[in-house]
Length: 402
Image (tube, rainbow, N blue to C red; front, side, top):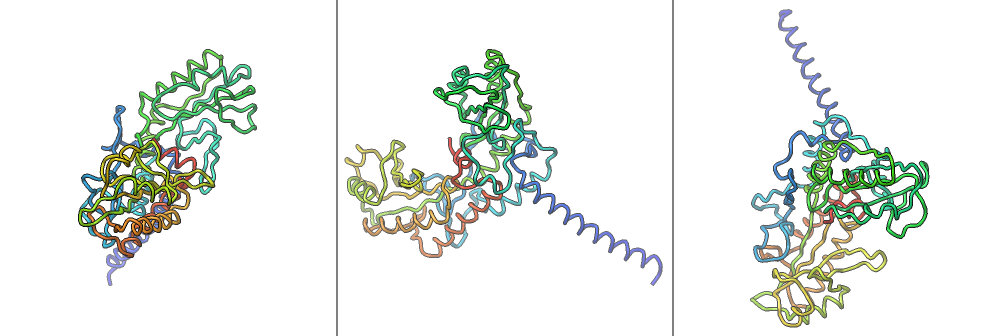
């Protein structure tokens, strides 16, 4: 063997080793970055095609176990066949979403600084308190009044309507806890924080909206008077778009349809009686909600199989071929347990109505299909926790509301 051959072999070995080391370093970098996803503005390397750039609301593509039912009320998110065979509907399994989000985040640069310097990280996000600013999901502008002020001095801000959830907090000293401010909050505060939600189901906060927010807070600062500290608008808009993309990928709702067969119909009065006996209550949104008594949280909903909403009048006068149980995964604590409970409730209702449980294509749901649904819920809940959104937490309710 010549010295040239030995040199080539050595160079090849070094090259392979270098690639392995590089891949290992990149994997560590991605894992670190995804844990900091909310503090990064990396995804702003160019607006996504489905992200609003001028005030338009982006439509969310949500997972589905089957083709959406054209006439039904359930969004494109109900049921995928247990076999996994379906036409391309834009769904990505949550664990694949992890990898894609990580690759986007890994392309980023420095983190956007938080005006309050108290970022929530890791599992702390699972227990974050509602009554304090959340710099990971809110644009925060702070005010330092020349002398302590009451909540009444902030009346213009407390009643402001910007088309996006807005919260005001005050604290009486630098090391004291924040207090959510309302018109009737007593006492005086030496520091104020105005917090605008960066993203929810209505889309991401745009540059014009963020500019309006900062201007409104600036006007209050001038009137107090107070020193104002505001973040960079472009950076906050970039954070909003990145946050909206992450949430859109993990915005999962699961539907189970209770359906009469052979064209039979369920009288609305009978459906209401059975639903209320099962613990549902009719609400203004045109559906029944099943509310957990201990917490007051809505665990799942029941809506009409037809596009018409449920109301007291329509239930008295009409009939329907079925109803749809709907689980909003990000908005409930312990989604897997709630999914199991909803399945049992759906089975009981189907028995009482002499109906069957089907997917969006009217195919009966068997144990394998229910197993696939449960796995999707579990994977989605885990994916939410990976990006520091504990299902059912105040953070999740804010991001997946609107």
